[in-house]
Image (cartoon, rainbow over the protein chains, first blue to last red):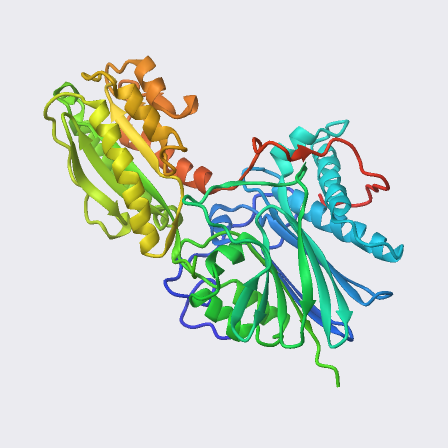
Amino acid sequence: MSFDGHTHWGSIAVGTPAVDFEPRPADTLSYRSDTVADGWSTGELTVRLASVRGYAHRYAGLPRQDDAAVVHHPASGAVVFAVADGVSAAPLAHLGATAACRAAVGATVRALDAGSPVEWPTVMEHAAWQVVEQAAAALKLGRPDPERAEDEMATALIAGVVHPAGAGAETAVARVGDSAAWVLRDGRYRALFDPKVAVIAESAVTALPRMPAPDVRGGPLAHGEVLLIGTDGFGDPLGDGTGPVGAHFAVRLARPRPPIAFAHDLDFSRETFDDDRTLLAIWPRQMS
Amino acid sequence: MAGIRGTLLPVYVLADESHSMGRHIGELNRGLADLHEALLGEPMAAAKVRFSILGFSDDVKQRMRLADLRRADRLPTLVTRGRTNYARAFADLRRRLPHDVRALKAEGYAVHRPAVFVLTDGQPSDDGWQQELARLIDRRITPEAPNIIACGIGAARPETILRVATRPEFAFVALAGVDIGVAITQFCSALTRSIIASVPARNAGPPRLVVQPPAGFSMAIDVV
């Protein structure tokens, strides 16, 4: 990690960087960190996770509205995760994102504990209802109100599980909204979900507590591959991975780096890409 | 979409240059200069905006096209001339917007829905402009259909301003003494933030709002 020159934030520039400035504090009643960095390994899998406040939110003094949760389920060896992207028009979206992640991971772990297949619509429904309950608590509504929850805490969610299998792993990923998943191998990104292809970049996003049938993808993850789960703050600048952002990550995700370096890599600066970014990376470990 | 260069918001000022605007044209030009200065003070927003200025009367004159205002020394000035032909103005936008969106995409950008600020005294001298406006804002006919913010100047007719704006909250009538440049700047800044901000997709049809706790739900999470 190197910080060139006397900059406020020391981000890695990819192409033309955004204007450099000292971020403002987040205008929230409860504490919300600018950056989350996490990482660990089980016997079979290595995990890195980072969630960074976008430059627009840093500039405006708003909280990071993305969040994530990732846990190990020892009995099955699985890694269970959720990544949420709070809808920016919802004032308490950061709380909705946190609630949705924790509820989704909790519901998935309960299914694994019971030895049942994970039912992704049920997981999403638990997350959606947690958002409704949290909105009722935060706003002191007296009773759950899904429409108020949508106005105040709407959040996109992508959740999944990675099971060790042979020399690699087996993945399942479900989403509501426009977060996405990729498998990176030898510098090439394979998108698990259909990419955005609209004439106009629309700002409307499907988000909990609204409940479409979740889009579920998955498949094997081989040694030498890394599963990436990211919010659109990562996915939009990545595009199909053939540009400079794809090259930036292809080098840095070839093998696990320290969690702080991983977060710094994610916090790259590129003009107009100022959304919150969250990225989870899971590598099958080399078995000796 | 290869690694895209950025996501841009094309903003158009469509200014009425007809003779009936004569008393206000100086104020509009000062307003544009203020807008330029104010956007320079909002670098995050300015980086995302590509700015065009169109003057319209009997025809449309392009005064500035898809400019990055951070790299513009000064903005062009508007001049009064001719009558107020709305149909020509909306027809010009209907050709121009798809062309501009394609051009920006060819440069490697993703593009937000264009925003058009119409500054007019709301007294069109032509008929048939409503049909041209309807074609411009119908997203099935014009996928690049803009959000239109209509600002009435001087003795503007409110009913015309309301008809031109794509939402009632996008219709304004400038009060005497209000600095139109400051008003546009504030609106432009708010629009840049709000258009770029994600919003829940409410009218997508089938997705239902969850209305009851699922079986086995536990409320054991405190995130506040």
